[in-house]
Length: 156
Picture 1 (cartoon, rainbow, N blue to C red):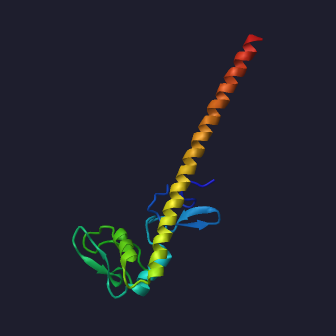
Picture 2 (picture 1 turned 180 degrees about the vertical axis):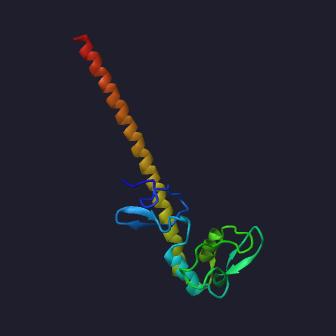
Picture 3 (picture 1 turned 135 degrees about the horizontal axis):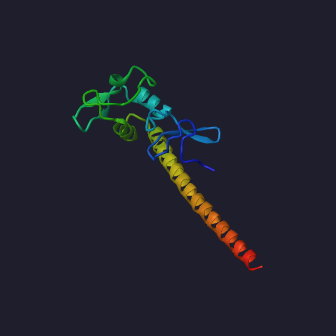
């Protein structure tokens, strides 16, 4: 049965989290930053987007290039505005989905991976909600059965 929580950090999954599989369990790619980019997204930014702006801060209207966040694809700890510290992860991810230097098939696969993850998390939540409802029904039916048995024995 799927779980609502990461098996590493025990925090709930949200639809914007970046997840991977650890055996049969779903886990955050980075439990400290559940919405971080996937390893593939980091590499695509490093390879295809090094020479242009990848994020824009709505709060202070500043644009940033990959090199301003870190020297390599896995050196970035977080995409935070260098001026106001706003989280720019959504802006970076939007850039990946729109960047014309990223080959069409890679850009499409990035979008498909995000959509599939979102559907998986949504379906997992729906299945768990349904299982929880059925569990409550079973408990209620068992309680009713016990009550009926008690009443039956009281009569005899």
